[in-house]
Image 1 (cartoon, rainbow, N blue to C red):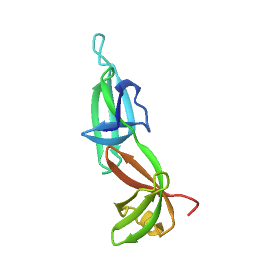
Image 2 (tube, rainbow, N blue to C red):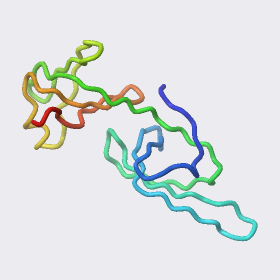
Image 3 (cartoon, rainbow, N blue to C red):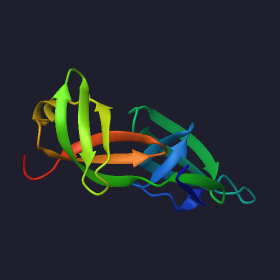
Length: 134
């Protein structure tokens, strides 16, 4: 699994964290110190990269959290058939299939020969956007 560890107090908006075994992008971080002798707490609100679900969790500020390594790669669309997109990675020339994105605007732009950016983390992949001004 491609993860590292970091302090919950170091999380920022736009960074990544694993909540409920799902890689998530941090939407909001709020810190609070409950009292004179209490330890600081960090409340993290995040959205799942692959499932889009919102998650919220509270950590002690010094707690170690898992941070996913999100690889942002480029691929070329080979074919689109039904709800499946066949892609070829432009670095490794590996071919693989992904489901058609849920965003109708992005899905309508996927045609053979188009380059797309896809994200890969924890064994999952997702098409994020088209590249090259299309």
